[in-house]
View (cartoon, rainbow, N blue to C red):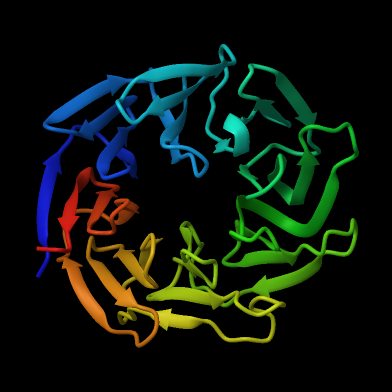
Length: 328
C-alpha cells in the first residue's frame, strides 16, 4: 500500500499541481501553498477562482476574484500577467512562447510574452480556453460550439458548431482532435483536418452524470474522463479517433462515481479519484488496479502526478488534500 501524507489546509482546495517534483496546492482564499523543504505560502489573489499548470512551461497560471491573471514560478514567486479591475477571471490557458489567454465575458484576451495584448470577440460567454500544441492557435468553448483563432493573424475564426453548452475544451497532444465537455452528460469532439469547415464530429455519450475531469495519456493514445462509476477511457490511436469504437471502463465501482482522472506522465497508468475520496491506480493494458488511497472526506476534485511519476497530489471538495508516494 502506498504511503499517504495528509495535509491540513484551511478552506477549499481549488487545484493540486506539481512543478517538477514539488507539489503546489491552490486554495479558494488565494493562497498557493507548496511543499519545498517545508510548507511555503504565496498570496496570489484576493479570492482565487482557477489554477492550471501551464503545459508549455514550468509554472502555474491563476485567475481570481480580484480581476488578476498571475503566473506562479517554480520558486513560488508570482508575477502579474494581466488585470481587469472589477471582473472575475475564472477561465485561463497557457500557450506556446509564453502566451497566456483568459476569458473576459464575451471575449478571449491573449497576452504574449512581450506584453502585447490581443482580444477576440465571441458570440457567447467564454466558458473554457485551450491552446493548440503547435502554433499560436486558441480554442474558445462557448454555447453552441467552439471558436478557433490564430493569434498572430487577423483571419476570421473557424467556428466548430454543435448545439448545447460547452464548458471545457482540450486539444489532443498531436493537435489532430479537439474535445469539449458539455453541460449535458456528454463529450463532443471534432477531427481537425486542417481545412476550414471540414472538421468531422465525434459524439461521446452515455455518461450517467456530467464530465468534470479529462486527462490525455502521455502519447495521446487515450483520453480518460470522469462522469461514470468508472473512468471512461476513449481510444485516439486511430486516424478517426474514437469514432465507431467503444471506450474502456477502468476502476469500475458499483454506484460510486469517478470524479477526477489523471494519467501518469510516462506510463499508461491512470489515477482515478472517486466521490467517496478513494483513489485507484489502474494500468490501461490489463486493467490491473492498485489502491492508492482509502475513502476519505469529500469527492476528489484535484489530482496531479509529479514529474518523476512517483508522487500523486490530491485535493477534495471537503478540503482534504495530501501526497501519495507510490514508490513506498
